[in-house]
Amino acid sequence: MGSDSGERDVHEQDVLKHLLNVESHASVLVDDAQAEADRRVAENEKENRARYDERYSLEAAELNGEYEKAVLAVKEDYKQQLKAYQESLAVMPVHGDTFSQLAERLFFGDR
Image 1 (cartoon, one colour):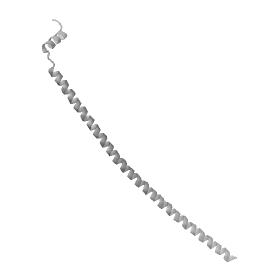
Image 2 (tube, helix red, strand yellow; image 1 turned 30 degrees about the vertical axis):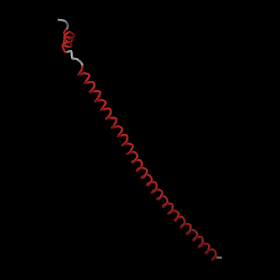
Image 3 (spheres, helix red, strand yellow; image 1 turned 90 degrees about the horizontal axis):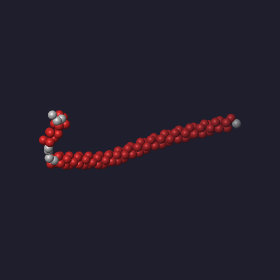
Image 4 (cartoon, one colour; image 1 turned 45 degrees about the horizontal axis):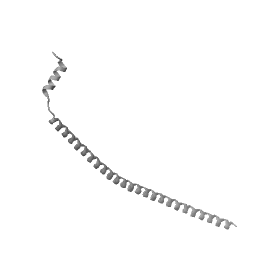
């Protein structure tokens, strides 16, 4: 009976060692899987960031181009309006004598 108990103890120890080895191996597999998942997530984030930056740059360049065109158009319109105003002033008659008489009357009254 003693040897049966000893064999059972050895067998139980072998089973426990085997289970500990399986658990250790599973732990390594989980760690490796987590490391791989972290790597893939980081790689995916990097790719997504690169795509975002590229698209953002393209959109920003396009909008900036439109802005520059709009600014140039407004400046050109302003120049044309200013030129037209200056031309309209140039053709208006100047009544210097009449203005001087009016100013004299308004500031100094009838003396």
